[in-house]
Length: 145
Image 1 (cartoon, rainbow, N blue to C red):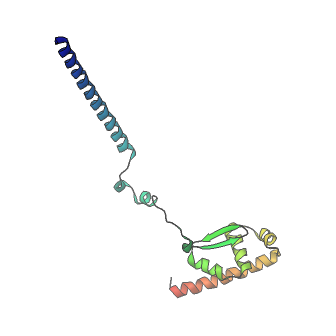
Image 2: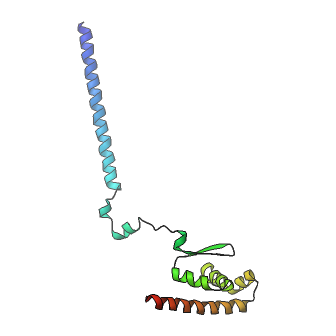
């Protein structure tokens, strides 16, 4: 009976010791994790304005830009005034402006794509630019900006 009592008490002490070790090691793990998080994480209030601004982005919806499809290229123009002005041009002038200024093709490449002479491309682009300038100046005067 004495052996049984000693054995039982020994088992209780072993279990007690085991539980204390588990708690101690778990608290050490939690402290290590917290220390790591303090080193890695930055409070939002500690961020500079530049860092805060880099954390968000604006969603673009179809209604937020003008979309043109030219020679298989999808071109999106966010500037509303410019998009409206380009939309008012003839189809040939739209294509020339978009291929030249948004895709970066030169007159020779554009003339090959549209099957017109380089002189026609140059002339139509020049007229389109003048037309765009007039349209944008009128819009600017209308809105006073």
